[in-house]
Image 1 (cartoon, one colour):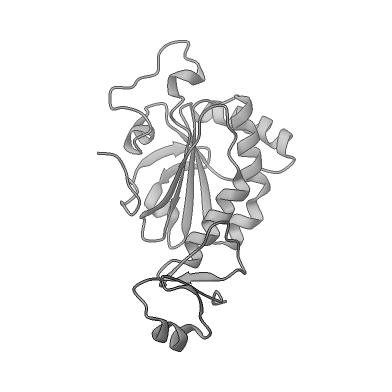
Image 2 (image 1 turned 180 degrees about the vertical axis):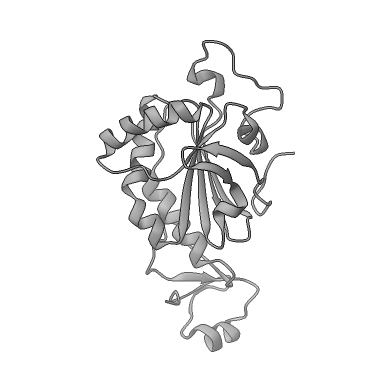
Length: 217
């Protein structure tokens, strides 16, 4: 069955460039971003891993750990890491998982159960391994984004989405289109306008079902 938002993210134990990773243990009490790639030493993926490396301070600020998945070995990952760091001009200190067994890719529904890695494979053989997962401290999947091979991921948008997930986590809010931190948030329909005023202050009633308030700091 396909993974859905609010499903528990599949736990796994795997080798990585940072040693053995137990995923739920790795997440701890923060957030995690799991981002997958079909093959090492590919141009689009190199730019993406470089973008993640350059955002190290932003992930830390948000109590978020990032971890890459590529269906190659740790040995290959370590060689590729040098290229990533050369391109990005930043250290790539996040772990990259060895998924030569395809166990993680299959658990996260990125490859069918009968998938295998043929001899002389190309990135096309695992092209569907191009997904970003944001996972919460409760180990539930909060967001998924799937990209084709030809489209580099927008990590500014992934960072914005992470901010939105965190801003609405456990509170009766949603974020409007194109929301960025500092902008107003939408009051959930489960909260009356009177209750919203008592709890959050001034309420801007744009429509009976669309009410905004200042985002709590």
